[in-house]
Length: 583
Image 1 (cartoon, rainbow, N blue to C red):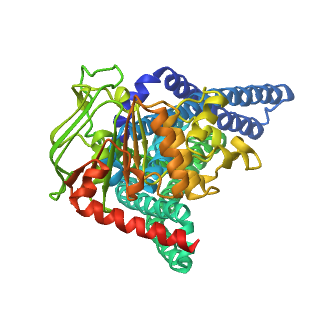
Image 2: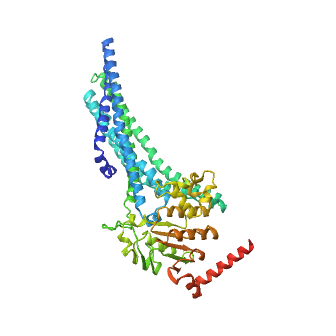
Image 3: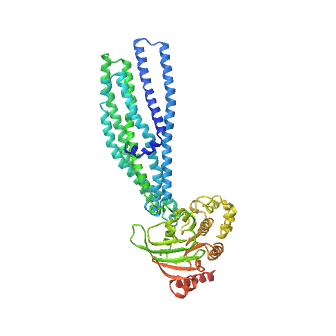
């Protein structure tokens, strides 16, 4: 019953609906007592020879009215109980999704996508069942069963009732034992489903890579393994679950044996009439469902409790990014002062950034170059407040970026990561993702800036072309240019290109950079790249190696140092010349 306590906030919020639903469910239970009693009365009339047409019609009319009333009452309780339980699922799903959008990078490193999807589907369905089927079975097993037992004692005979109810304590004991085992096994089954779900999502997303490396068979075998584990864990659940019905049937069978034995004797000795005996047998039949409901109730509650604990554990996770209660709401503007003495990722001891210092005036461009894994992307993650715990300070316009609200900061930064993500919609909707009200002219303007306008026009449906899941129908260069266009359309105060031109040719890259320099002369830009050509015209270039700045200056100043930058520039120039000669 602990899960009902956990959901107390919802039942309190929807108490009117549940009071109405439970009340009408009780009314239905009371009305169900009439048909068996009417049947017993008619049988007694038949035995005594006193049944007349008028008496039969009278009882038939009462039965008909009872049936129609039950139908109407059932409609009311179903609408209030089942309908309100769907509202719980909607509330929790929104709460969970809002929680996902509010969490930081550490959260998504801890929980895999498939696991989170399982929480938002199977777990929420199990919780909803507590507020729907759980309430129904609770009322049926406790209240309806209780009403039926009272009727058996008052209408027929209390002694016969007590004898028939002797097996019931064993029913409660069996349900408790089986229920506790079911809780743990269902938790494991849900975890196995989460792992399978995650594997499915990962395989579908990475299908191109799987096929490219010819790993289809290996991936299928791994999927079979995950699926087999789900089957194994669910079989363990069903082994316990399947014991409920046989236990109930056995206990009910004992009740019938006791009832027939003692009840038959009472009829023979004229303690009760044959009509009373038939009524009592019908009441025993009516107790079958409440008895089964007790077992089903434990099943529902244990499943719901396990799922609620899983969802609640997710909701209890706190983002490490905490907004200042008096955060600055005005948009970021001004100069950037980046002073990081030391940064390590959460729960890691390895220093990722050390003594990273640079100043960037508004309207300037900073180039960031270095080997893969040198720390370039981490520099941007701190600017984007993916992590707030570091030794040092980053200021924007003389204010620590942690003093800004996330909206004031992030809505004015255009970030294009190395791995671009496009939504499964049209090109136009992807470009104007940040503001769906922007007109076609603005969409085309940023597309021209990123040299992708002509490519789009060559497509059959132009800007209405669907890009497919994650932009599967586009080339790497087209995806990069669309991602840059999407960042530009908000006219960001700060534009960060994190190796976002790696898939475009040198000529297109030059055209894009020239357009950006002209368009963003009064706004700040940071470009990280492996190709030196991407940062040639930056106001300052820093070389990052192992999380430290090893060289800095303009292009000409860095060439004069004869260091890593000069070496890479010469190497890339040679490759370009060789390729040009070959062409």
